[in-house]
Length: 329
Ligand code: ADE
Image (cartoon, rainbow, N blue to C red; front, top):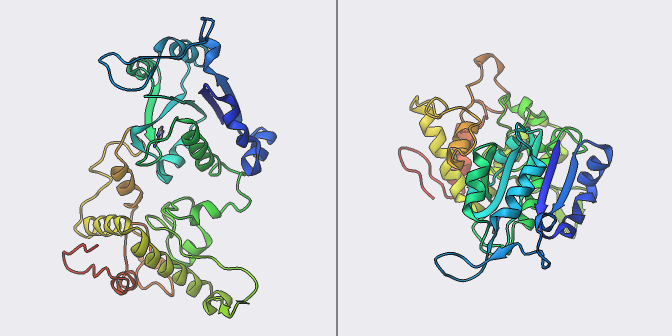
């Protein structure tokens, strides 16, 4: 994968040579090229900003250096995906990270100040795919930290970057390839066992620490029971910390139970620019399992967007009585 980053602070991207992503870059699995935007300025001060038309505080990044930078990095006929971090963009999520990880070439354009002149994205759209993306509902001083966050989330999904190929599928929000747990619980859809959920806590040696025991089921060797326990603890933690996700999951489950095919209601699966909710609905609407592959410990399949009786009982215990038509949170 090729990743180009355009910035006025190239030194900001030192961390890309560290840790697993640094190693992947060393191996040549990812190629980062960081460009200094000021290379495309020609005045003595290398000016990249100017005051906004219409007045208002702050400065806006001038279009000319950006236009030249993009022409030079992605000449006519090239097909990169240009990602512009901005608090006004589409939400960055695990789904979006996975979509970007499947792209061969990403260009990130880091704005500063009040952002980049609006014509730059418009003009770029006439010759390449462009997505404006936000990493959260807060305002950073520039796109650089957002690009570090996004590149980490994207690159760790690339084959060979994580030590354990299964870890990404089992992550919070996980929906990667089917995992060991998914096989045990019968979930073989691309929605992993954590689809739409945050993960519960993890434990390691020693078995007892400061009088606190590791949950005994994790020492039992019973993979089915462990998988069920992990899903239960994920449901509980999601109910506690992310009621918005539980509401979404329940909504998708209801839609499915009512026979509404959420995927059919949407355009193509990987349309750029699709709303985050739509993406999530798609991730949660995989086809049901065949009846033959019922797991021992999950009376109905445990699959993304589908809640079995046990899931509903765990949620009710955690304060989400999601029976009938109520979607409580
Ligand atoms: N630039 C400034 N704030 C940002 C945010 N929340 N996400 C992405 N880019 C940004």
